[in-house]
Image 1 (spheres, rainbow, N blue to C red):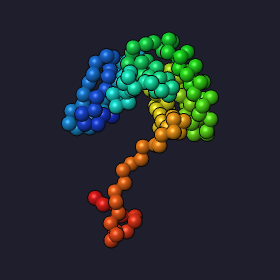
Image 2 (cartoon, rainbow, N blue to C red; image 1 turned 90 degrees about the vertical axis):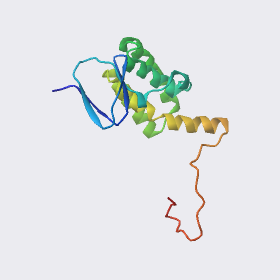
Image 3 (cartoon, helix red, strand yellow; image 1 turned 45 degrees about the horizontal axis):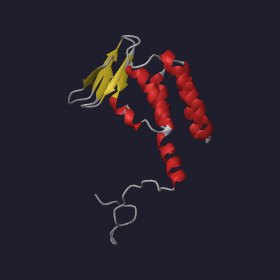
Image 4 (cartoon, one colour; image 1 turned 90 degrees about the horizontal axis):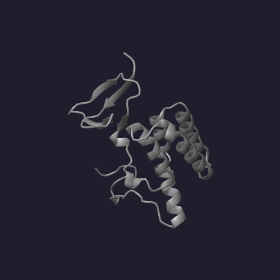
Length: 156
């Protein structure tokens, strides 16, 4: 059997052709054999109210194709234009590689792969915005170290 195989975690939700499907208590696999089905893992979804930054807006366009809310033909022009605009800002090697991957995915009609590549840029975008606005990046809260504890051991 060919097609897309979704490996779902317990209680994971996925949107398939407009219907939200929730997995049970165990890991499972679904085989999607219908070509052209609109599929979006909800853990990958960007809420419309969160799509306020350039990267999130472009990623959201790819998401609209996956959810079936827009056609690939309508979205592809906007996606390519958005990726081109992002390439003017993200000039480092790693970011360019992700933008190139997103471009190729859009050209190949692989909108999930485009979304996946674009999502990797969100933390970088957050850092750029924080640096531009003079805010410090959020840092993970560090636990105080005990004098008797070696520095490479973390409290449990």
